[in-house]
Amino acid sequence: MEVSIFALEHLIEENEKSITNCKKQLKEIEDGTIHVSAMKSASVENTLEVSSQSLEEYKAIYDAIPQKDKDRFKELQHVQEALAKQTYYKLQKIRLKRNLNLKRTQKLEAMMVVDELPQEVNINDPQLIEISKTIIKYNIRETLELDVALNNIKNEWQGKLSSLPDNEDLKTFAFLDTYVPIIVLHLSVLVQDIEEKIKEHNENVQKSKSKIKPIDYKGLPKFEDWWIEELFKNHQAYFGLFKWKSIIEGLCQTKQQKIIWHKVFSNWLMIKKILSNKEENSFDYNFIFDKLVEKFVRLEEELDEKNIQSMEKIVNNITSKEDFTKTKEEHDTHTLYYKWKIEKNKNT
Image 1 (cartoon, helix red, strand yellow):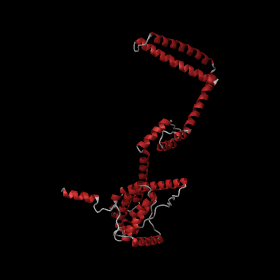
Image 2 (tube, one colour):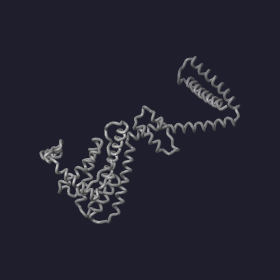
Image 3 (cartoon, rainbow, N blue to C red):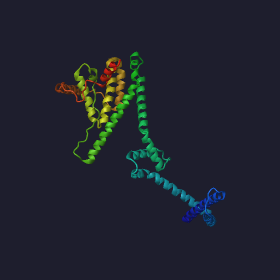
Image 4 (cartoon, rainbow, N blue to C red):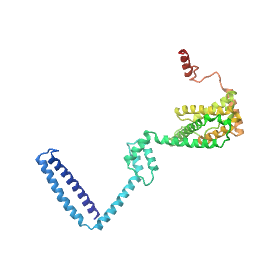
């Protein structure tokens, strides 16, 4: 019975559409909007007559069916439609994976959108793909994530600053208040990217079973405060800091990461050196800066005395073997600023 009801409803709908279309065409012919041959006009009239007769017959059959059977069919139809929709959305991720026309980044983004949507909200595949393309095009997800991360760092920073006593010494560091969270964010993003690349490298090595060794990453090496304190007083302090920086540079997996590390390191060192120069007046401020970096970057200062003594011996050995007559390949006494300044002086 359900099949018959479905077929009758379909036939009734088809004939109703045919009648509407024929009436529209006949009116346009009568008004002179369109010009057709007499044969074509007769064909339209014939189609209208046949469709009208068929509609009358099918409606008579449909009306003869008990209402309870039609109601039961409607209910069954709603259930089937609901199940079809449920299956459609349930298999959405599988269809995305098998879609050869989508880039990998678009597939991943679309899957993330599916996961983020509330259960009661469903969107079809074309809409989902367009949303994911827009997110990627405007880099929305990364921008929002960075904005959230920066706000978290700012809130943590401001919270720690508010706990410090209000005095004149701390006011001299006010220019750093806005700068610090940005530097911490840059460090955090860089370290996270380095760790992800190392993880990818190790997974690829494991899959390929090649002779390439996986990277033994146990976290960032710890820095020592005396390197910063004695930076321009003791060449060993410079070498300690230089080698520490080189170790982290060695963890970088791409040229871009190395460039970013060089810039971020310079900014971090600048803040540490400014605070170090203030000595006791900056201890509280320096401490909460270190704690912020420790929390969001997992970069810590070495506080174990044995490790400090051990590192000092290593630095001494490195310095004793260092050839101070060598310069790096890209060494140039004529820096870009030097050249610019020479030209500037010539023109003034």
